[in-house]
Length: 449
Image 1 (tube, rainbow, N blue to C red):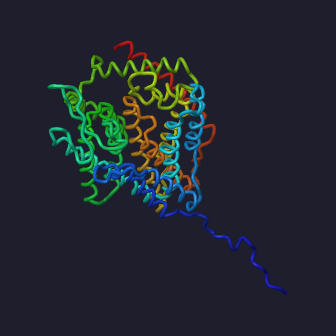
Image 2 (cartoon, helix red, strand yellow):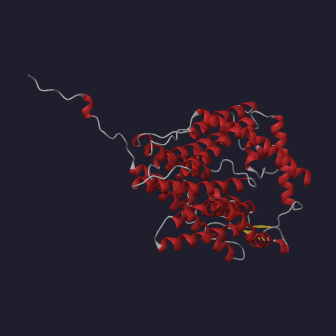
Image 3 (cartoon, rainbow, N blue to C red):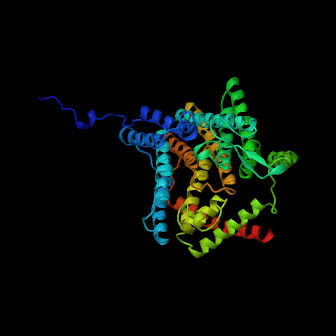
């Protein structure tokens, strides 16, 4: 009698995952190029498209070597927004004559989001990327220190800018590339404060704690040097969120009351903040124009990055920017993307404790999500005063939360963490409602100016 032949399924590998270590290495290089930007330093400056080249190579390795691929509702929303941006261009009667801004949404936001979502399959990998982000901040502040120490504001990578004249002249530090504006640099520093906090509280090493404290101090100094009032508000929001999470509601109220004199001193030593300030008046005027734009084209808006074509100044508000450029539908999609970040972070933070090594891993993921959500609070607070709706590093940080959520969802199937279409629909309704709240806030500010 012939022996039993092995069935086909016995020859299939039991583990179909391929984490692509070299692909992750390429992602680390890409992250360093995006955040540190050495290819734009004067000593290395080149016309070669290094950043775009590494993005393409990393994406090729993502497609060919990483398995399984990761996808979530936020990635779907970003793709839907891409097609909606095309419709917005058609509504503005530009059709497909100039799609530069729309294609930038793919190369600078969608693809990086997908890459970070896919390659961050472990907490160790995520910590490496976060460490690169912190090192980029240290380099930025070091470069800013050179600018502050030079009477002409000259640094080894970029020169500072001066606002005002005479005794009111103020130097504002900046970096290169996407951080060329002090507001961009300030926002990035604000979002990294919680990352430094995360490393501070999640280590037993005295050296790492001291290093984290030193980096946090450098971040606050760098924010002050940028002279960005939006970043100042963002840093205060980050501190408030941390106190609330760390000490609870009662201690939060007490510590907030005790810190008011310190906040007052900080505001007094910063750039003038008041309704009579010309910069504030310009912002309110731009917000008013944004309202008029969304009234004129409520559904599709005027097109991505087209606000300056209809007003002399930028909106100085990321929410108004999306509202006016992409209309009510585009704003709802974008706001849904943001709110899903907090939904995922909240769900992970509220998971019950479990015993054993898996419980330790879960607590680490929960801690990470708490500090990433604080970073997002910093972004949203700062974004209310500057127009950075499509800035790359925001979508990278959003991918951090999404990747962590998918890791927890896979490692702990006993918890129901699936985000259903009904959940997304409820979030979308809340996002649409936030448009009304935004309108009322702006109308109130316009009445008291």
